[in-house]
Image (cartoon, rainbow, N blue to C red; front, side, top):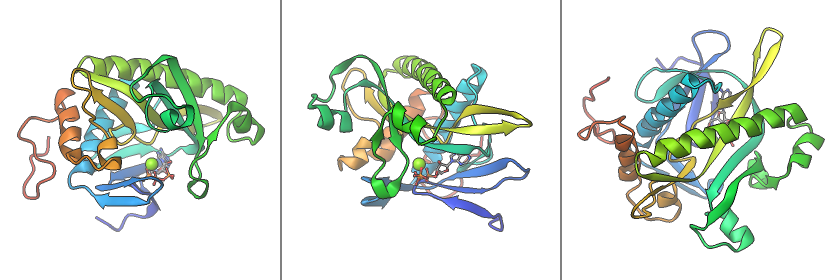
Length: 254
Ligand SMILES: Nc1ncnc2c1ncn2[C@@H]1O[C@H](COP(=O)(O)OP(=O)(O)OP(=O)(O)O)[C@@H](O)[C@H]1O
Ligand SMILES: [Mg+2]
């Protein structure tokens, strides 16, 4: 089983060679990290939940014609994906002020933004993923101008879909981060959504209580991280109440 070739091990996931050329297996670990790996813990059950939540979101996006790398979920921790050439930019879409935006601009957390804002961060751990502008991206050739147009259009469509999805289950989508890649098909190349969308990469607040249901629980040492992720999954109709992904022992595979 573990004879597969490991292509990359990141902080939260492992990529293995897939069964066919051009495919990979994305394995979700239980590791939680924050502040560029300064804080690190193993959180039992997180990987299973992120695999399920990301599967649900990517399936919906595929069905509405947003191109993604996702093919199908293989098991509790793994999904089959298309290998892409990752664009070294993290795209953040913000609807409500939180996190680094509050620090940078002196805004109060929870301030509704006048409109959704897209930000770009250069994926570089040594530099701590610095904020960059469109000018940097095109000048340094990280993405070409037409690619950047596609990326922004995709980011807005994804924000619209996710905002509605979460709103319908009593969750406010404060912000989220996505990664995109180039998928090469013959002599065609297109931009597709890659990586994951999960409570690790979104800020999700309960609409009525403002309770945090995302990785900020870990960043801010609030506890109850897995329970919050489980509640997100439950509201999306992914997990039944007595599913206990953090427990060992037999698990019903659906
Ligand atoms: N379809 C794909 N093809 C190739 N690489 C991918 C694909 N989807 C995601 N990746 C990459 O796989 C890695 C996933 O691992 P993980 O999220 O643990 O990384 P990380 O520790 O956050 O580090 P990084 O800074 O590289 O994102 C990321 O580097 C991500 O860019
Ligand atoms: Mg990552």
